[in-house]
Image (tube, rainbow, N blue to C red):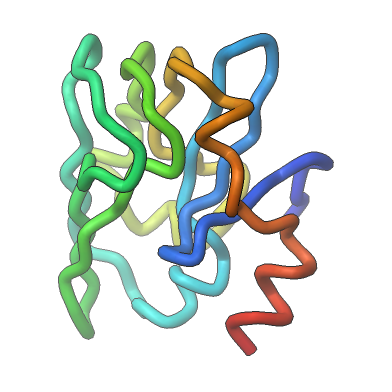
Length: 125
């Protein structure tokens, strides 16, 4: 599992990687580990906008169903369609198998309170 540099994590277990006012969002390896075998994921439509901390997706595993929260506000510009048909890919690599890409509304302000990956790992263990 290769984690890109510069990833930030929310306490609700989403990761985000921002680049030029756009960001890629996924679910952390810790969250996926806790969920177990993933069997279903419902992702949003391209063009939908979400506020920071708003639920934008749901995921189901053999253990539980969970909501996935937007770590920063923005508009969906791309959805990882391969996860819709093969949600179990998340169990293979949490960082390669991102969920959505967004256009950020205000990344600098919204990213306040997000943790660097190592700090996030320390907090969840």
